[in-house]
Length: 168
Image 1 (tube, rainbow, N blue to C red):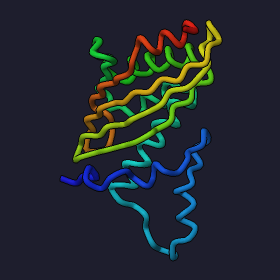
Image 2 (image 1 turned 30 degrees about the horizontal axis):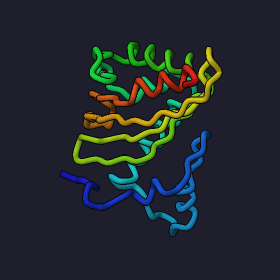
Image 3 (image 1 turned 180 degrees about the vertical axis):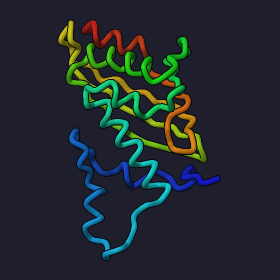
């Protein structure tokens, strides 16, 4: 089992992402000798997390759903499981409707074998109230061998999220 759990914080997350996906870490490739590969489990997982955050920030619900296995599922705060890519896309469409300027940032990633924790911050202006909302949470992933999300447990403080939407 490969794990970064004992490695401490990933230096990868100490560098900023941009909404367009340009990431300071990617610039390191320019300084490698020709033919040197940067591919590693750490790179693969960090790229997965980066690309997932970019998908959420893109406004494209199908892009979010593409990170899930065909029969993958997400369960939000112990709610009913949302099963299948079409259902995941519909769920993401709801977030994008509520927050047209939605930006999701990956704050941290930890993994052990096929399990990962994606810690995130969601930020945007609510479409109906106009209130600026910043919500933090995480997803606990079970990944397939080809690194698609088979199962995600999605956690955030729904009461605080609603208070911010309401402007309280």
